[in-house]
Image (cartoon, rainbow, N blue to C red; front, side, top):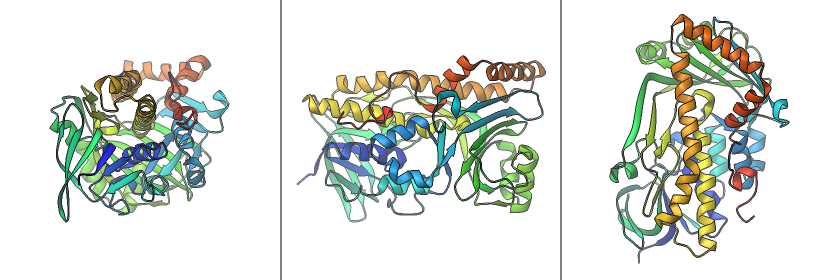
Length: 408
């Protein structure tokens, strides 16, 4: 007998697992197909890298009932210091500006994954097919049939909706021949967790330097999570340095606001590009997270953008189910796509614009951006708007993004 589900999610990383958790408490029968065993330390979504959680993402996790379990593992971001190293401009963002306890938070992928997956395997409404991969799928007027491959062979799943949460090189998106707008930045992100000379005090740093933007995120255990957008031509040299040489290079680039860096954790890198799918829905199919959009890590928006996809899609599906509407019908999914369009466009344009602006070496541009940062620092209404955008609380918000459960 072919197993039948309301929703089949391809990809059990942080975004896919979040959607499964959101739907599991609402009675929707959900399948998750993931190529890695979810408990595996090799699962790339659940490693020890620093993940920036916007304040709006905290509200989503709170609405899903997960924040209490995660709260003790996160480090708050109460202040953000943005500067252009070697130049006069800077901007400071503070949690008091919006009367919140923090602008955002930082967790490791490991801790976040543990929180998301806890209880998922025991949910009566969720079936995990892990490790497994999608071989093919076929969407008809009434359902979608998905062929998956496991160690014991192939099997067929049937559902009302297929959700692609399978990353920037989405097999589902490519199989549907959905085109993308793509721009390579000629950069790679170098990530590592560092032990600074000055312990974290709730301050995150975004420093624009001649060798690329460098973000430092306060992390638990007295560490900072570093994300360094490095030119491709410099990548091999930096990755081949021993720990001492690597720390020295980071110190030269970042400066001494955190004292002398004492220790570097494991390093990893990945190429940076802007990718946005030209379509986010097809009949019986919806794209979320990196399958729909991949942005530069500047300002730490990527995961948070995906979580807002989750919050909106979950609300649309739960409401459709209550009203007896077809979950996979194009008119149902159009509500999701239209709702998410503006936020995705704003974040894509904002991150792309910042990368282009701060990588321009021309002196007039450098002077202009310095003046712009100082002006922003002295203009509370404008600063408040952009702070709310970074926090993920601008525009029309779904119930989860207001900290409410989907039952409200």
